[in-house]
Image (cartoon, rainbow over all chains, first blue to last red; front, side, top):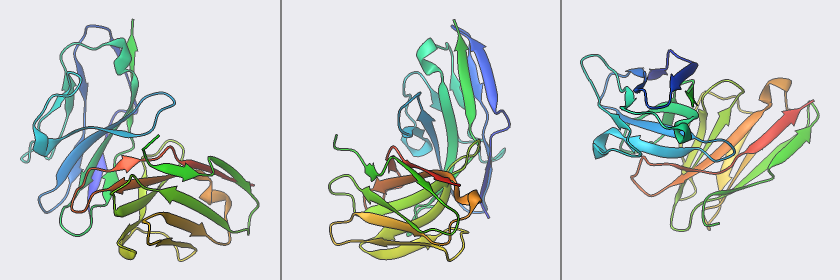
Amino acid sequence: AQRVTQPEKLLSVFKGAPVELKCNYSYSGSPELFWYVQYSRQRLQLLLRHISRESIKGFTADLNKGETSFHLKKPFAQEEDSAMYYCALSYRFGNEKLTFGTGTRLTIIP
Amino acid sequence: DTGVTQSPTHLIKTRGQQVTLRCSPISGHKSVSWYQQVLGQGPQFIFQYYEKEERGRGNFPDRFSARQFPNYSSELNVNALLLGDSALYLCASSLEGSTEAFFGQGTRLTVV
């Protein structure tokens, strides 16, 4: 069975400092990995997905199949990055259910 | 708002009662999924429906059921409510074959 682990429930970072939110997964096939974000009083929304290989709001994430990790990184944190971040996994073709981690609450200290 | 809409936003029920939650997907999205999010946890998959057919089911008891209508809207039903069913219930819609899910604001269910 697939599983997503986010080891940090809380993470505080000073504004301007680098950010790294950790995500590890277990899955025997070829998963699709995502980062979802929930800002205060807003709905859960997609931040980025590994197949897109894009940078969104300065965030990037690289899928490391050897380490089964998909860590989210940003070189310089901004106050508006404060939010709840969820790593999620899906397998494609026929059932697009998402398996989420428990989430990391990121707080940017001014 | 052209996003996924859910109703009601909040609900309080008594143990043993039944509840129906509703979801309207984004126009053009034929796939609807339901998730349960207990406080302090990530969303947990309950059901996925596509073209009115159940495509996937998570590890939830038979007290949970769902259906999808011809207009692609969906209902989630929970019978014989338990205190542990108290949670935020999220609906998500997506395009066929896409794993990108668009979430609603959720229905906060409290069972007392």
